Length: 465
Image 1 (cartoon, rainbow, N blue to C red):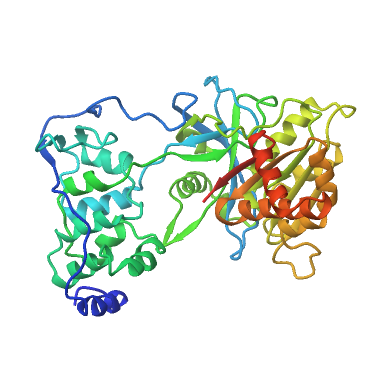
Image 2 (cartoon, rainbow, N blue to C red):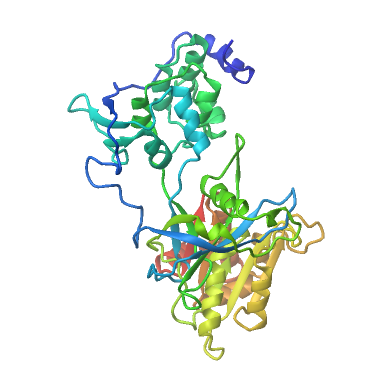
């Protein structure tokens, strides 16, 4: 049996369903030919795909310095701050702006695909369509090398859609493997698709690892693999302090299947491979030949308006657990530079983490801005400290609900940065509760009030999923 024991139950269930309702599958219209010609630049059918939400061109910048913000502890995921040297780029940014980092697939992943499919990866190819119905994806060059495309153009870690899995099943020789793939994309296997593909973030690399006889022609991958998109990161610092550097903060996520985040693991490898200091217990700012490694970045449009108000008299309510606090460091840095204590509105920041000894990132900076009067109030929540008076940011907001409502009614702007699926929605619900309790509003009135704050550009959310 080629199918692993992990999938044996799926095979058993599918065997009880003799007829599967499968999605419609169109014939692959792509055709590829190879030559021994050298290719220096990739050629596209139309214009080279634009960078999403680009406000600037692409710049290859060096890492000036870096530091780890969290403790070195098994129970604490790594969080780093990286400082890019953008001298000569003329990038003009404001607190709340983001940059896009243009990633590439690891060589090990690309080599695995090349080996599994026995590809001629470094030969020049020419891509065409078999009929007028065919269409080459805009992000796939019509002339290039497969090594370039697999490294820079397609997302090898994207979760597979059902129709892609069905196309793969048509090129899977082993009967049991083919049957399981068909069941994944069938109407009868919808629940199994959700639990085994979506929830486990199964990608083409996993499919080829598990289903050894699945060896489609490269045209199938070029037709179905999604574009490898840039990753967005909040800018930590203020342009007013030093326009020649851009700082970002990121955590290195473990995504399962022995994988880390694509871009964050790449950045981590750059900074750690350049120095032996990461082996030491106390890790601080390091400068070395890490500067020689260039990272492609660009400035993104701030379409959401998530930027610090120019009017210093505007009170601010800043809410950011974990790395969600990072853009607010730039807010505070700029306010500190421009600070006029007589006319500045109150600034209140809510921060949350697990343990102050492990992952209270930017603690020193936040205390500094509190001491110099830029930050009027700092409220923290520690979720993994049993005797902590406040364990979650939501609790902190409820405890201070009356004062927050007074700030909102006094013209405060609210900024929320964090996880879209849980935290951002819960924060909104907390504000509704506070308005009901302390502002004599009905539930419906409070919900409309918060919605109106968003329309009036007084309630901003910078969230990721």
